Length: 196
Image (cartoon, rainbow, N blue to C red):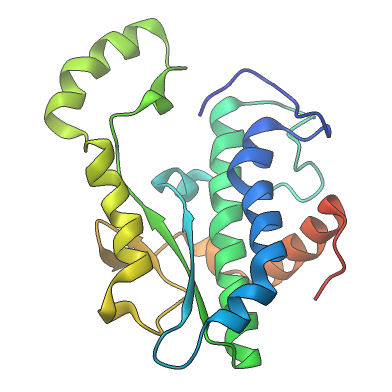
């Protein structure tokens, strides 16, 4: 999070590649296996790790690599919004096909990990005492993903955004079905996949 402008070997902006495009590609490559593995009453589950930062995100379809005007926070927020858009579009496709697979996005909240290492020096110094009181431990943060992946009350329930184990409304933009479809199509092009 909040890395200086960096590109991957493939030329993608680092936040976009790590936080979104990698998830998109991995899920796409595993999708046939997930469809075969699930069954009614015991669905396969896709759990994507998002962030409340997605509320501030804007997906720039004409500049997904943040080349025109780079902002580390903007790039991070875009990547997390892209992940929620992808999650909802994937769930819609799975439901329309009648496949026993669900997809949800989870927000673990503020977790005391090295994620915050790129904050300014003063912010890092202030974070340490605050984190001990207000931040979740890594185990507590991971428990949200485990809940989404295993909770019996979420069996067959997809297309949701979970914060602290509860369903929550994500950003208005995340429900834009045209943007979801456009991002899906562009993502397929970027990673060299045939659009399903």
